[in-house]
Length: 467
Image 1 (cartoon, rainbow, N blue to C red):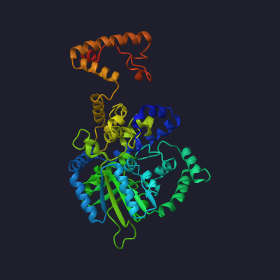
Image 2 (cartoon, rainbow, N blue to C red):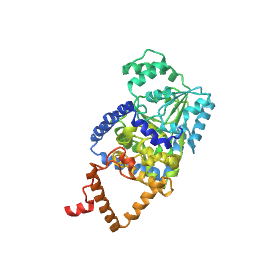
Image 3 (tube, rainbow, N blue to C red):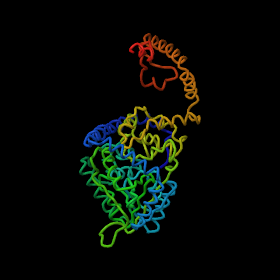
């Protein structure tokens, strides 16, 4: 997927002025936020479960090479082939080679964010292989000129029923329908023959389990079965950080993933797949491949952003983020939107290609509060801002302002004197003009809202009086 993160500011303005998008995004709060609250309340030991999940994810990441080798050994024992790719492009090339090796003409594919990193659909189509998405949301995006997902769990959350009805009518050439069961029936009748005729299935992997050589797939539509049962070849593609040591670890994480993602106690379909079809079995692939992608992940190991590797891709951080709730996912310009994307994108594609993303946060901390594996996203975003400043990537005016502020902030007496003077000036100014409507050197802030008129004394002075 081509990186467009450098256009974040312009795209954000466009999304804020899109009235239809604003209406559609309201579903995030109504559907996911409240549902998560209810689902979490079902667990008496939710915080203990989160803490245990953090410890097991840390254990897996700190010995990543050990668990990957164990997974490879056990997956091979199950009859699968395990391949490693250093880059998303290399991973795409491996999938294309597998398709050619087995004379594949058509591929069915389930929702996978790693394959978005790889631009896999384009690579297969360029090689003359037809690709069809099995996830309904991903299919809607595919027939809409291969539009990228707006959300990692609900990829088409930015569109409403009327928009999808128009798209179905245009693509399928049938009478326009607006009844949801009728629309899903239409999609099923169009797609089912394509699924049944597929030569190869491609899926992601929510986790891969080292002790058994197993891939775990979690869906709500059951569409992954069309990719793993019907075709003669199954290729599972996922990031190397998704390895976990044991099935018991998976049992812990599956208590958190659906609750954090969609507010469900458990997803409708949970599949644990280990290798090829055995003698006497009626379904399953004759050939199974695992492609484990680095794509910048090892670059986070041992560094200050290693905690991002704990991420289980639930989407809770974006569901609760006040910025994402107003602009949706496309403004972020790459595969991963929201707070997690604002850290992952600069880490994977380069900070200079995602200049605005570390700033795309209020640092309210809500993303950290709801993260099932307690990733300190606000802290990581601050670290990225520090790197931008240290590398001179922020505008000169901004850097000079912070240098001046830093000079005074490191000298407490001088800082308190200056703030006392500034508070009195702002208080007088605000009372004279009926509010502070345009604050010098902060016009970006006051262009959208008035700056509150101070009372005339600093926090330190008020605190001392209270004390």
